[in-house]
Image 1: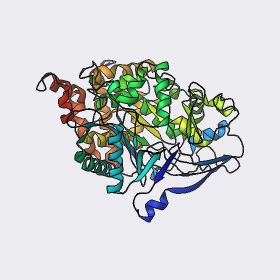
Image 2 (image 1 turned 120 degrees about the vertical axis):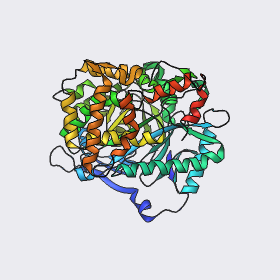
Image 3 (image 1 turned 60 degrees about the horizontal axis):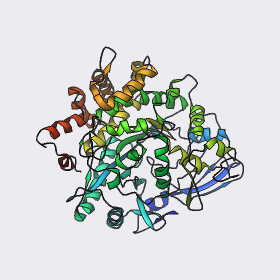
Image 4 (image 1 turned 45 degrees about the vertical axis):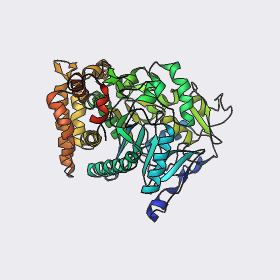
Amino acid sequence: MAIISRVASSSPSMRHDSLRHNYFDVRKTTSISNSFSFSSQKRIVAAVGCRGSRRVIVAASPPTEDAVAVATEPLTKKDLIDYLASGCKSKEKWRIGTEHEKFGFEFGSLRPMKYEQIAELLNSIAERFDWDKVMEGDKIIGLKQGKQSISLEPGGQFELSGAPLETLHQTCAEVNSHLYQVKAVAEEMGIGFLGIGFQPKWGLKDIPMMPKGRYEIMKKYMPKVGSLGLDMMFRTCTVQVNLDFSSEADMIRKFRAGLALQPIATALFANSPFTDGKPNGFVSMRSHIWTDTDKHRTGMLPFVFDDSFGFEQYVDYALDVPMYFVYRKQKYIDCTGMTFRDFLAGKLPCIPGELPTLNDWENHLTTIFPEVRLKRYLEMRGADGGPWRRLCALPAFWVGLLYDENSLQSVLDLTADWTPEERQMLRNKVTVTGLKTPFRDGLLKHVAEDVLKLAKDGLERRGFKESGFLNEVAEVVRTGFTPAERLLELYHGKWEQSVDHVFEELLY
C-alpha cells in the first residue's frame, strides 16, 4: 500500500489543497483521491472536456495513493477519450511542469547510493524541509509537498516532479530550491548528485533496485521485449517538460511539432557519452537505449501525423499497448503482455471478470514511453539529464516553441514536408552524430539555428523576460558541439581517459 504520512505541520493551503472530491460522469464512476503534482503521474485536474459540450470532470491517481473507485457502470472507450479531452484548458490556465532525474553517488567510492542511504536522505529532507512521506508498505519511496513530489526511479534515480508553474523564472527557482534542499542533507551524508543522461561508470550488477512493486514486474518483463530495457530502468536520467493544450486541434498541432523537433532537443541536450567507464560511441546513449527497450510502447508515433489523428486514435493505440500491471488490494498484479482492450471487455486473465477503473487507465498511460506522450497534457521526453542550467533551458526551449502561436505555426510550416522516414532517420542518427547529423542539403545544426530563434522569439512575446534561459543551449547551436562532445574532449584531454572526473564536472 502506498500512503502519505505527515511528519510536520503545514500551511492550511498546503494541507487542504491536496484533497479534492471529483467526479467523472456521475453515471459511471465516483472516484476520490489525493491530488499530486501536475508533472508527475500523480496529477488530478478538474476540467471541462474539449470534445463537445458535456462537462467532464475527472479524478484518477496511480497506486501511490489508496484511492477509492467504485464503478457503477463499465467504462467505455468514450470514457477513455473523454478522460484525455478533460485536459483541455484555456490559454490563461496553461502551466509549465518540469521533471528531472539525477544519480546519487558516494563521494569516496563513486558508487551508487544504496536504498538505505536513499531512505535516510528522504526521511531527513522530510523532517528538515517539511515534506510529506510517501510509503509503499513500510518503505519510504518518495516525498510530497504541495504540488511537488520527489520519487525514485528503479535504480534509485532521484526525481523531482515539479508543480504547475506560470513562468520559467518560477520553474528555475523551484529547481534551485530543490537542489539546495537535497544538497544540504546529502553532503552531510557524503552523497553527491550527478547531472548526466546515463550512468557513466557502473554496470547493472552494481545498481540496487528500489523496493517498488511495479519495478519487480518491469524487471522481469523487459528482457522479453528488448535488449536495453534494464539499462533504461536502472541507468538513465532525463529532464522533461509537461505542457497544456486548449483543444483537440491544439493538442494535435503541439504533438506533431513536438515529435518532429524531438531529435533536435535530443541533440541539444545530448549528455550521455560514457558506459562502464569509457566512451560508448554515442552522444546520447540514453536516447539510443529507447530504440531497443520495447517497440510496442516507444518511438516516433507516425500515426500522429495522419489526417484522422485525435484523442480517439491515441486511445486506440494505448488500448493495444501491452500492460505491465494492475493494482488491487495493495498489491501489483502482473498483467504483462495483456492489453487494456481486453481489460475493458472484462477478459484480463490475470484478474478474470474484473473491469478497469479510471485509475487503471491513468496508470496504464504512464507505462507508455513514446518520444512525446499524451496524458491530460503533453510530455516532451527526448532530452538527457544534465546540470542545473540545462534543467531550466529544456522547458524554456519547448515553452518558447509551443506556447506561442506564431512560433508553433512556424514550426509546423518548417516541418510540414518532413517524411516519416526523415523523422525516424533523425531520431536514430542524432544519438551518434548530434547536430552534425546530415539533413537534406545541410546539417541538423542549420535547422536547430532556425528553431532556436523561434523559441527565443516565442519567449520574448510571452513578456516574462524568459529568453535568457536559452543561453545554455545557444552556444551548443552556434558551435554544433553537444555537451557530450565537450565531455569526450575532456576525457581524451585533461582527464587522461578517466571517467571519474565526470562526477566532479557534472556535480550539482
